[in-house]
Image (cartoon, rainbow, N blue to C red; front, top):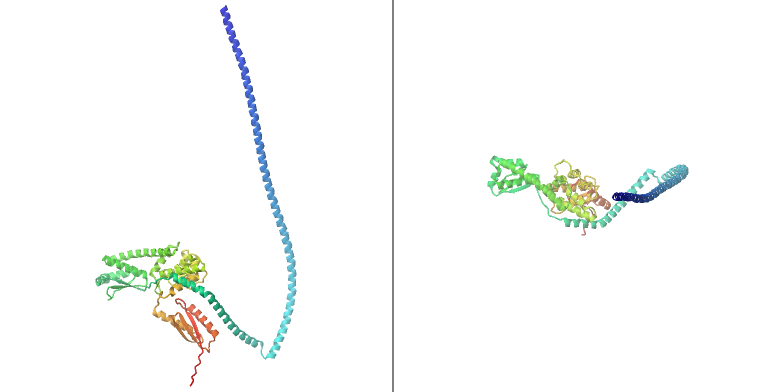
Amino acid sequence: MNILFYILSAVLGAVVALGTYIFVRKILLKGQKDEIIKKAELEAESIKKEKIFQAKEKFLQLKSEHEHYINEKNKQISETESRLKQKENSLNQQNSELGRKHKEADAIRQNLKAQVEIATKKTEEYEALRKEAIKQIEDIAGLTAAEAKNQLMESMKAEARTQAQSYINDVMDEARLTASKEAKRIVINTIQRTASETAIENAVTVFHIESDEIKGRIIGREGRNIRALEAATGVEIVVDDTPEAILLSAFDPVRREVARLALHQLVIDGRIHPARIEEVVAKVQKQLEDEIMETGKRTCIDLGIHGMHIELVKLIGRMKYRSSYGQNLLQHAREVANICATMASELGLNPKSAKRAGLLHDVGRVSDEDPERPHAILGMKLAEKYKEKPEVCNAIGSHHEEVEMTSIISPLVLVGDAISGARPGARREVIESYIKRLKDMEDIAKSYNGVTKTYAIQAGRELRVIVGADQVTDQDAESLSTEIAKKIQEEMVYPGQVKITVIRETRSVAFAK
């Protein structure tokens, strides 16, 4: 029994302890729950306050931005209204001004109308008085009005002619004094800086050979080789009794050069027959074309000219094998380019454009297009075709005054061309054309009244004109020289310039015995 009591007491104590534990745990868990809930409520309240604060800040920001936007719009509206008011006021002022001017115009119109009526009446009165006065003067003088008018006009013409000639002389003297020194300085400086040697060419090239044996091989059996060479090159080959020489005759220097180089290669190779001739000529032509292109490129590089079309470069290279009045065309073009660049620098113009125009001014001479057209016009068309600047094209076309000068560098090209062709040793003429030019110059001067004798001196650079003292006055002599110079300039082609000197003198001879 005691054991059972103890067991029951132990079980009961365990149950009581377990119940107590459970009770105490419930109480503890309830306290933790309340604490967690309270803590969560506090955090929720904090988050709520923070969110409310952020919302207020956002609201205030949006409100501020809205107010700023509204203020800007109001400001713009105010400015627009102000401008409209100003325009309205201005228009009102203009309207009032126009009204006032309209009234003034009406008043002026009425005034002018009245003045016109008065002037008409006075004109009628003046005409009547003038007719009466003319009648009285005619009665007194014994001359009609037409006769008196003619006498007065003749007298005034003579006086005006004398005064005009005197004025022209004064202006020309002043121009000479002011311009001659500077012009001479520029031209002389240009010539000194660009002076170079000249190359003289003709229509015949001499090909030297070592012996007559080689001459016979060049001719070939029954002349086959020489005929094949002439057909391939277009050059006439003259074989005569001249020792160790063969003449290559053609007006085209390129063809002569092809023939010369082909002959040179054939003689060195030793194989001379028609098939070989055709092969060598074709090869030499290709080499010469490459050389022409290289010459054009080298010329442009030497002169500092860039961006030129390849076809113009090729034409520049062809200038090496052309001549004008015995002057090598490429050397002449280089001289003109340097002269134009120097003068442009002295005058404060663009030297690059002037140099470009000077180099291309005779490019029409080497073109095969439209040979009947003047070379200056043809050169201008080629420059326009290959996109050169308008000022360069005009300078090319006007360097012989065949088109109007519109570019400021055009006179430079004209002067540079004249300087290059006029220097001693630059050009040579056929004696027949030289004599004809002198005779034409003298004939032009003889065509004027009062001219007794004419003399072309200094290789046609000066023309002496002797006039009769009883037929030509001093004033007429001065105007005569200008007229002769103008006519020679318009009708003749000549290198450099021609000085016209009119001589008028009176000689009285007596003998003392």
